[in-house]
Length: 393
Ligand SMILES: *Cc1c(COP(=O)(O)O)cnc(C)c1O
Image (cartoon, rainbow, N blue to C red; front, side):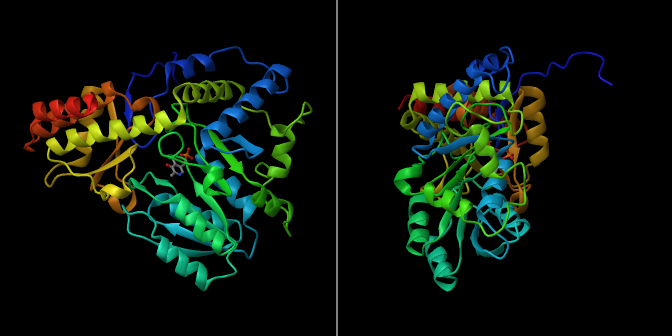
């Protein structure tokens, strides 16, 4: 038993999420809890939905945060949109595409896999061929920003292909939202889910989702009942839907939603295009520093995410030893490789509030110093200078 209050040592979070949470968000979460059907809270819910529509670039009425982590957002999309026996094409170019496949299977669907190399974008030509070979596929599912590999896929093109084959799209935007351009309406994305703890600078535990009318029609026209009571959107909408009258479905995480509201408000104050630009700008500075240290990003330049940088670990350097020293000596967290990339790469996140100069400079100088200590040749002072220079550009 812990006999006293928990006070974690402050860390700088530059892994694959959670990212640093903005102090304004933490302060908002400490405000008094009110009832989840209190008229004040209902007004806050409406504002959260409006701010989410802004962030997602959509007018979709069904736009709201699901109570649960990004994985619950993922599952909500699949249990509502995939019925037993439905064929669903799923693109796997990293860990999260693999999870989508599992969701399809568990919803009783039949996954048709389009496999791509880890560290590369989803290949639109393969998707087109696959949809041609399976004209009865009901869904195309893919990840916009693959956090396990640092690759960004072309949402606009993939959605266009799906619609040519009259297939509905489910897009994972957990790491994308707030960090990479995403235009839900202009690109025609049918169903999308995201997460609070990556580029939104919020705490983990909430999953924004948005469904357009096509996707909602699919939910309403189902032959079978949705197997999950908690995630059945027909029921959830009774609480999150429009109008004054809300019926109890589950107790919303009231204070967590104060935090999400504050985070979305900050994104609105900054401007969504400016947030995308900030991620690109800091990414360029991080890259300059990493390259000066002799490190390489594994994703080809045109397919790279700005908010998640996957760096090859130099030969002879022990992955865990470096990450432990960064954590213990500099209170800096970076991510390990996942799946096939375990032990081969580090994942350096520049997400949301973590995407700022002070984090970049700490990362380059601390990583540079630890690597130099372990015998890796690299010009630490030159790397810091290169980072400053790119930041000033
Ligand atoms: C983090 C992440 C998830 C899962 O989100 P959790 O909040 O950890 O459940 C899903 N997809 C992608 C691309 C992610 O980066």
